[in-house]
Amino acid sequence: MVINMSKKKAVVSLGHSALGYTTEAQRDAVQVTAKALADLIEEDYQLVITHSNGPQVSMIHKAMTELRRIYIDYTPAPMCVCSAMSQGYVGYDIQNTLRSELLSRGISKPVSTILTQVTVDPYDEAFYEPTKVIGRYMSREDAETEIKKGNYVREDQGRGFRRVVAAPKPIDIVEIDAIRALADADQVVIACGGGGIPVIEQQHILKGASAVIEKDAVAARLAADLACDELIILTDVEYVYRDFGTEGQTPIASMTVREAKTAMAQEQFSEGAMLPKIEAAISFLEKIPAGRVLITCQNRVKDAVKGKTGTVITA
Image (tube, rainbow, N blue to C red; front, side, top):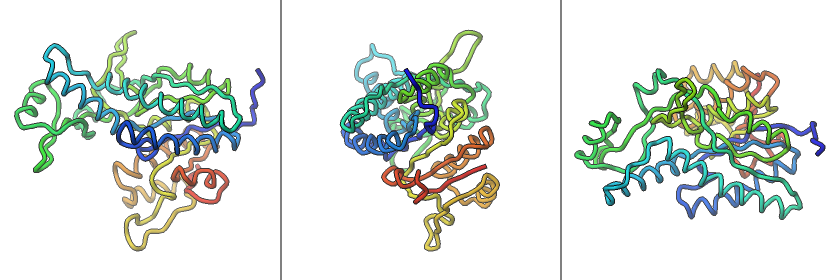
């Protein structure tokens, strides 16, 4: 097999809007997402795809917890198992829909999902101050049961209590060699879904951690490990904006790492929204200075890679 070495290598990070929030919404959403990804492949990109999984892993965690409440013989699924389930379920929808879209365009290309583990530091400060809210609303009694098990909960005034888990920084992608082998063979790879399954390395054993990893942070690590030309982050907005959400918001067409850090210091980017994407861009470019990061919405990505829209960040 002859591999076209001139292809542009890119990691594409898909946000919540690319997948929807329910099983039915996801089926519809990935039909649109597959067209955007196929557009990139037609533009001669060699793609590795990663994706969010917040609603999906939360739904699975909720379902498994409720199953335990109804059938006492069942055990609740730990977060690492819920993460693995979400990777398989989301990957299944993306790979089948994208494969079908490519074949409709006369492109025969394998699309594979790799169940991916990502190591984290057991002493990461995030484990002492969990921030990621997941799962169902609980009564005070159920919340106290969770606390007795050593879990964290947070009260949403008037609605109940919800489980809160840590969001540690990624260290290593365990299956990186497998991802690289498939990508180098010009296959489309879906990997590190939802930030990867968080695991703690104990000698030769990988133990699942009760955590959720920020998917954009893993996307940056994945793109750097694969020495990609680009990291493409697809989100809900066409540009990164200065003074976002105000009457004076202005789109940012391009930024350097230095300019991005200055804007971060000015608190231009909100936590849980644009900030993780900017942090991911900086992380990637500090490892791959010749690369570039593109942040835009998926329905404009075809124009964005041609420089017509979107925000480009460079070293």
